[in-house]
Image 1 (cartoon, rainbow, N blue to C red):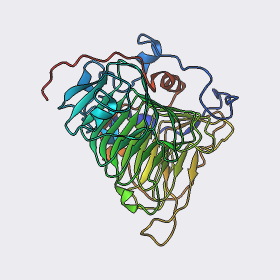
Image 2: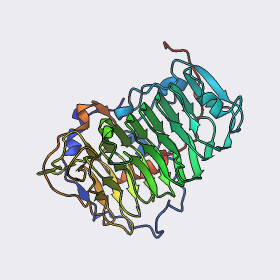
Image 3: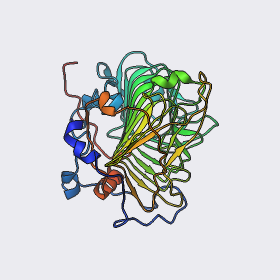
Image 4: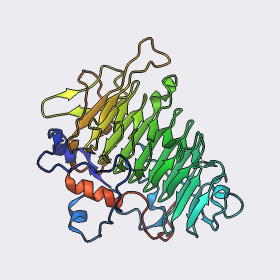
Length: 397
């Protein structure tokens, strides 16, 4: 699934671009989602046949999601080897509820027999080897969110998160020491804290095809400069739509982060932020700009689309002191093949250093050049989708 890096390298060396000829006017709203619903892309449309999009085959079988994530979360199997658990009601707890299934210790593939809103009075703690699969229904979580604490092999697919209340209310909270996580095709908005927080040495995580809107602090990777153990963290974010969210797409401390084929528009402060010892790569036809930091921590922004509203600068750097270092430093952003439109200024700093490239860690990803076709496609394929729950065909598990 997907293309080898070597097969698409000819896209990467083109100059990072500002699209003055086809610039899109900034939206009139200050920040927040588009006032129009993004259209679905018909399967027989010209766009879908000319663009290579990820995960074309994961809806053919219930468990086809397992082990199919691109990027750092590619080993996440979820509840592949468990039985199917049916959520039969919208209660906060009790038999047949989502919480009841998530707390069970054995592997489970959790599906929903009902649609509607589940009001959560507290975080739902998700134990290891679980798939929470919202295909076939429309499930919205509100009040609180999901907590992935010291767990592994979790897949979260096709859910909505909206209206989280409380001072520490995140849509999905991943901490501490969790790994092999895949969050795919979810819609997230309007939580009091973050939409997704990844902290405390949680690693090998992929976030894909998600739609983020109507929110301030969107994705945080690394919570505090004193948590230098977070140098182990690795996260991939791809084919996501950041639709007017104010900041943190993401904000990163310490981790290796690969961003590709995302569309970020109309941010309120910045698009991407590199804090202490994070790095992001920027490549042009003649220069490679990186930061003189530890050469394993980096944000690598590859073939993304950045469309400014009132705030024109996409990339921001914050200087912080790691808990085990004497001097403060900022992070590094490497931008390769990114498209900057509607007057967007990259805001990149130019120093020398680091060497992280995603191909050192995985050889396949579905990577397209940043184009207006990709921009329009991402508005239709991200977030919760009206897709049937596939049959559970027997497989060799």
